[in-house]
Amino acid sequence: MMNENRLTRNIIIQTLVNALEPLDYIHAFWEGGAAALNRIDEWSDVDLYLVVEDKKVDETFLAVEEALKSLTPIKQKYDVPHPPESGLFQAFYKLEGASEYHIIDLAVLTLGSPEKFLEPEIHGDAVFFFNKSGKVKARPLDEKAIIGKLLKRLERLRTRFDVFNSFVQKEINRGNYLEAMDFYRVLTLASLVDALRMKYSPIHHDFRTHHIHYEIPSEEIGKLKRLFFVKDEKDLQEKYHEGTKWFHKIMSEINRKEIEKLIRKS
Image (cartoon, rainbow, N blue to C red; front, side, top):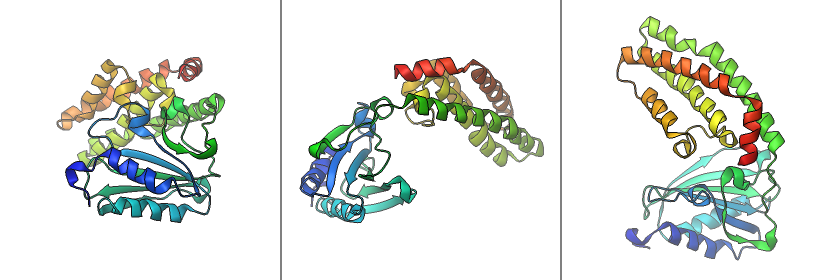
């Protein structure tokens, strides 16, 4: 068993490469996330992807877990359900002998899965450890599909905000500040984040706050951060009004031509 101080992300990955590459039903193995975006630091988790034969998903997870156990016990495993037709199977692993931040986010994709998460414009430059016979390839970015999806989300966002954002004020009026804070978070602030994404980083319009510090102007991040931190009931009322006004301003500035231009620049 490895000493805790020696169990680095590189050791974890190399152990998996050694165990998985010889298996003929595993076609490709790569790292995405922070590695693909060149943003790895000491707190980065380990975002790993495997493409396997359609009927070999269970065997793949067993092979991964045996390899990890050869290094250190698996402290926790958390399965994430996805629709079977997606061809995506996902689990998170926390290892006893690794940093608590080196959680492994493993996505096992079937060869027939329609989504491989490899478009560099969206997911960065994947770091491949092996890709047998080059069977796994990134698809060209479907700009038309992304723009269509974004415009639908934009209209839904506008309607959702108009219908439900007043729930914050309703609960303030009632003196129900816990409910008001929750609605402020999931309606006002979440809508603001989506709107800012669509204005400045439409290629990542559905990433919520993930990577937001790298993709939204620092001045806007400062304003958003201030709205996120509420000190008391009076502050909530003021920031709710400010956030609502800002949302409408951002939405008035978003237009299809700008969205298309930013996506094509990605």
